[in-house]
Length: 377
Image 1 (cartoon, one colour):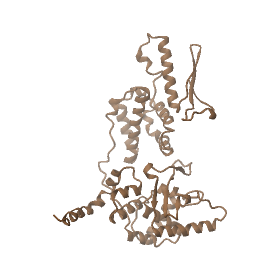
Image 2 (image 1 turned 45 degrees about the horizontal axis):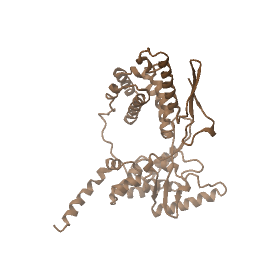
Image 3 (image 1 turned 135 degrees about the vertical axis):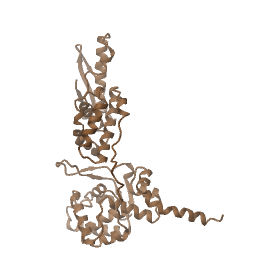
Image 4 (image 1 turned 120 degrees about the vertical axis):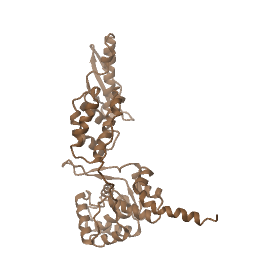
């Protein structure tokens, strides 16, 4: 049993390149082409099952469900291959790096996975001192794996699936959202003596872009004639100690967007671009990163600079991501429509904007009665 790929020139227009071939009862069998290795593997198994059943139709049907008892680890490996052309590289990276968290389930046949196995795994994973977001990411992945087993191998674990529950931190208090007001930001930026970092933090504050979007921003996507920036790239920094960074697409489709920039930021970016060109006359390329050069600025340097400017200016400590909240607060408090805020920030759903910033709209409720009171009624 093996899966093969055709030569590059034989790959079909819709990307089909995988096939299987095997010998059974002194006969050679070769399949059509498939888009993914997982599809070819599944069809190969089904083909062999049918041939075996035909050879001995007295064989109990239950024994034909699987050639062997697929373990959790084997399912995970097959799932990873299946997802390679369906999810972003960053998601695949997460699948690869977090598989050790499922080690307790590795050798258990998927068919035999039961509630006791799940509860033992849940107790084990809680002791790893992972954050709630990571725990629930793992829970979501476990559900995906069980769905995959049902879809591709007819292994029904619905009795277990229905018992899976998200992790909850009962002692967690709602985290207060921190952000800079316009006056606080002016105080913060006033101590910066490097035009590069003035541009960087103004991009954060006035445009509300994510850290990865800022690091991935290239000069070719900065239009200083139209005064807009095009968010098309995202930088992810792996934590494996090997890769320096991954250049990917933004978080989701709405995150690929065009953002108008204020006059002050446009002026600073124009000046900074001139400086970069001046000191790199022969090397400068438009595909250079605004935050760095041919490579993006290291996130650690970005955090160190932020902390430095906070201390020098005397403003409160906030995270890099809180500049995004600061931008949203600035827009909402100055009358921006929630739909505009959602589009500006690149949120996938309007609910995300409302759930995150609904408290900022509380003060706007009084305006409703003012509108009614001003009506001629």
